[in-house]
Image 1 (cartoon, rainbow, N blue to C red):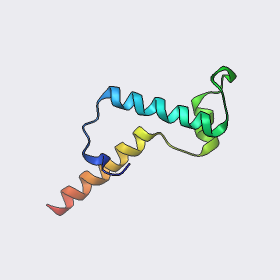
Image 2: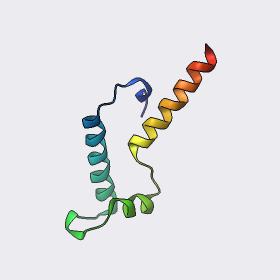
Image 3: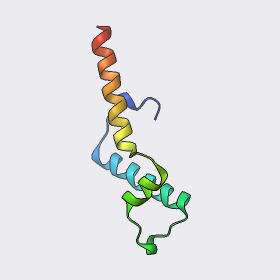
Length: 70
Protein backbone atom coordinates (compact mmCIF):
# COMPACT_ATOMS: atom_id res chain seq x y z
CA UNK A 1 0.00 0.00 0.00
CA UNK A 2 2.03 2.88 -1.33
CA UNK A 3 1.94 5.97 0.87
CA UNK A 4 0.11 4.28 3.74
CA UNK A 5 2.88 5.22 6.17
CA UNK A 6 1.36 8.65 6.73
CA UNK A 7 -2.36 7.86 6.53
CA UNK A 8 -4.36 8.65 9.65
CA UNK A 9 -5.88 5.20 10.15
CA UNK A 10 -9.22 5.05 11.94
CA UNK A 11 -10.68 1.83 13.29
CA UNK A 12 -13.58 2.02 10.83
CA UNK A 13 -11.15 2.30 7.91
CA UNK A 14 -9.23 -0.73 9.12
CA UNK A 15 -12.47 -2.72 9.44
CA UNK A 16 -13.52 -1.77 5.91
CA UNK A 17 -10.13 -2.79 4.53
CA UNK A 18 -10.30 -6.13 6.36
CA UNK A 19 -13.80 -6.81 5.01
CA UNK A 20 -12.71 -5.95 1.48
CA UNK A 21 -9.62 -8.12 1.81
CA UNK A 22 -11.66 -11.10 3.00
CA UNK A 23 -14.19 -10.73 0.19
CA UNK A 24 -11.34 -10.63 -2.37
CA UNK A 25 -9.71 -13.72 -0.82
CA UNK A 26 -13.03 -15.59 -0.95
CA UNK A 27 -13.42 -14.56 -4.60
CA UNK A 28 -9.87 -15.72 -5.43
CA UNK A 29 -10.45 -19.09 -3.70
CA UNK A 30 -13.95 -19.45 -5.19
CA UNK A 31 -15.43 -19.89 -1.71
CA UNK A 32 -18.93 -18.74 -0.84
CA UNK A 33 -20.04 -17.49 2.57
CA UNK A 34 -22.36 -20.46 3.09
CA UNK A 35 -19.40 -22.88 2.81
CA UNK A 36 -18.30 -21.84 6.34
CA UNK A 37 -14.57 -21.55 5.61
CA UNK A 38 -12.64 -19.65 8.26
CA UNK A 39 -10.72 -16.53 7.31
CA UNK A 40 -7.53 -17.99 8.77
CA UNK A 41 -7.82 -21.04 6.51
CA UNK A 42 -8.05 -18.86 3.41
CA UNK A 43 -5.18 -16.67 4.56
CA UNK A 44 -2.95 -19.72 5.06
CA UNK A 45 -4.07 -21.23 1.76
CA UNK A 46 -3.06 -18.10 -0.16
CA UNK A 47 0.01 -17.40 1.97
CA UNK A 48 -0.96 -13.78 2.62
CA UNK A 49 -0.77 -11.57 5.66
CA UNK A 50 -3.53 -9.12 6.63
CA UNK A 51 -3.48 -5.67 5.03
CA UNK A 52 -3.63 -3.99 8.42
CA UNK A 53 -0.47 -5.83 9.48
CA UNK A 54 1.30 -4.82 6.26
CA UNK A 55 0.40 -1.16 6.89
CA UNK A 56 1.63 -1.34 10.49
CA UNK A 57 4.94 -2.83 9.32
CA UNK A 58 5.41 -0.13 6.68
CA UNK A 59 4.64 2.57 9.27
CA UNK A 60 7.31 1.16 11.58
CA UNK A 61 9.84 1.02 8.72
CA UNK A 62 9.01 4.62 7.83
CA UNK A 63 9.33 5.75 11.45
CA UNK A 64 12.71 4.04 11.88
CA UNK A 65 13.90 5.64 8.64
CA UNK A 66 12.79 9.10 9.83
CA UNK A 67 14.53 8.63 13.19
CA UNK A 68 17.77 7.52 11.54
CA UNK A 69 17.81 10.44 9.08
CA UNK A 70 17.39 13.11 11.78
